[in-house]
Image (cartoon, rainbow, N blue to C red; front, side, top):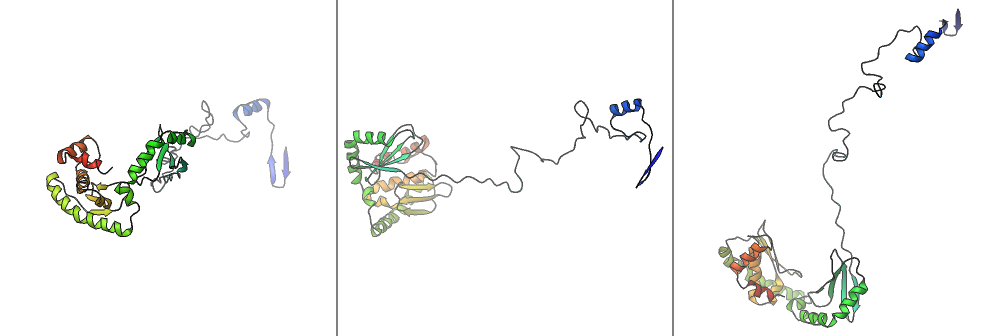
Length: 266
């Protein structure tokens, strides 16, 4: 039996019960159509059904965690260091206290170099009231230390004029080259560039890689043996970078009285 539609004649035929069972078991393959071979391994899933043939990926593609995101430049950008928080400032019995939070276990107090205030470092859990109570109980000792420090040349230097600083610079610059030339053959070292600065926190510095030595011009306010001690100290860093046992041994060898000279700077 034939029927017609707009696209032309289409032949139909009866489908028996047996063929319906075969279609249900083998899929919806059109009756009368030639069976199509599937590629080897195609159509397999769990236990063989639905698994597609594996595809090779480019080397390094799809890696996560350790290798992810390394496209193009491999430059690692470091986060900028956090700026130190401003200290909490308060007064206890006429003493100015500048409290800084740090990763320390205990409260630490230090008299400023100019003797004008007290720098305190405390752990985060300690309150300003705890610090104030400690300063109150140690008031007499702290006041005596502040007066002593205020009388030192370093404290007086903090109020010096530009003309005074220029005078210190001229004195130190005139003395240091001769001291370096005298100690280099004794210590077996060779200094590089000599520099001079008005520094507030250190007496000198040395860059062992270049031999550059910088000397604090405020040493002009101290006895000459103090300047010589600082020069030898910095030259010694050309032999030993740190301040460990070997450094102390070298200082003992070249300048046996170096500790006495250092104490005059405190």
